[in-house]
Length: 323
Image (cartoon, rainbow, N blue to C red; front, top):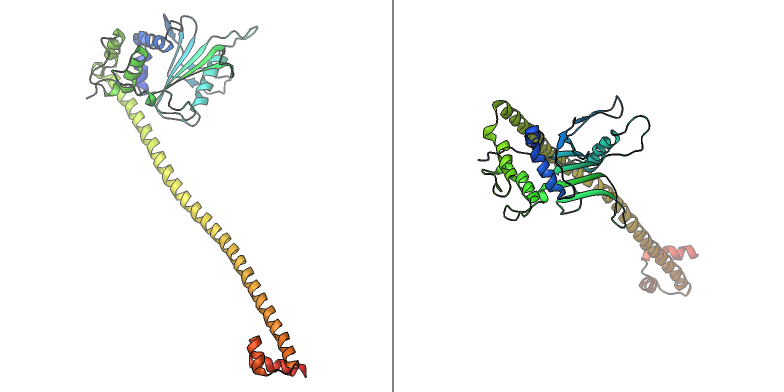
């Protein structure tokens, strides 16, 4: 039976990374994430409720918002289910933090770097196909040279991380493996690799939670499961509605196409029949004229019938019309 917190519950994620007592876990993870680009020695948790641009603006709430000792602002967000505009949403939140750096009076737009890190328990089709980590910066499109380091967005699509425990070579890979699978562990892996995983095991051990914290955690799990159930139901009903609508539209389209096809076929058949009728009438008139000539030459009714196909009644009528 699993004995560790599910980090994809809202409470569980914040319990692991968003508290003063676990701050060194977040520092360790971020340093492993940036792999020597810079080293975070300390950080401070900021006010997660960023004030809007106006009094009427809604507050923007992040899972974790912190500032490094160098002044870099970092947003760490966990997202369980996909959204239609998730990439734009993350860009919007990041931009709001940048805008909030503005000061009144004289200011030369010297802004501090803002990094957003998104744990994604789903695959977004707008991000590169099959790529676990997408690291976005402002760069020249042709050369790839970074133009500004003041905004950076890192998307981690956990379903695309497929390494096993034995295949994880770096601490960052070990972090991702643990976070992706932690709610299934009976024991915490990598304890001999890095002491940080021992502390992670201690903090996330369900058996050490107080009754109050366990109640909060279970509420968080319930909310997560309800959201998942709602998501699945929406997909199911969407598929059913789609099938029904598709059937109705298909029938309507089929009827319309059938009518259109029927009209086309009718017109085509009518034209063919008209042409045939016209030909027959023209042939019949030709035979009448031929019969007149034969009658003028004194040919018998039997001979005229043989060569024209006219009936005796028709030949007699033609004969009477000549007198």
